[in-house]
Amino acid sequence: MKIHLNDLPNEGAAFEGELPPEILESSADDPVCCAGPIHYRLRALVVTDELLVDGTLEAALRLRCRRCDCRFDGALGNLAYHYDQSVVSSPEYVDLTEDIREAMMIAFPSYPICDPACKGLCPQCGVNWNETTCECKPPADNRWAALVGL
Image (spheres, helix red, strand yellow):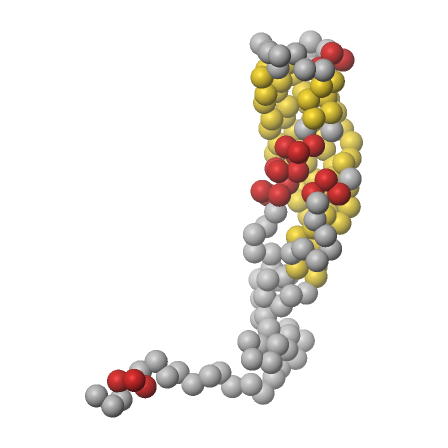
């Protein structure tokens, strides 16, 4: 998303639109990826040789549960966005795409879970405990076995 400084009125301007999910450079195999376009509502203003941009970002997400490895839908809604940069050198435009990408990546959940009650996978056979049970028994606790011979 480019803001052309020569076209920006003194009172500032509002920008609303969409960016393609490809700016995030994520794939469908990633734990978190965009499921659609990134919506932005921004207001830009130049104040004493500094470009100030404030607004919100929103995107539909496709997440992979860290407990059971299933895919589920989520959203990143009304993410506050702020950008400021000196424009003393009078560039023709400022490209916010990389900064928006970074703000989105930082806001992604680091440990997505499909449901707080998710039971996860069996560590021995890998069955999804949300869907079925297994006959696996927990491994024996042998932490103190070395002390038995003392």
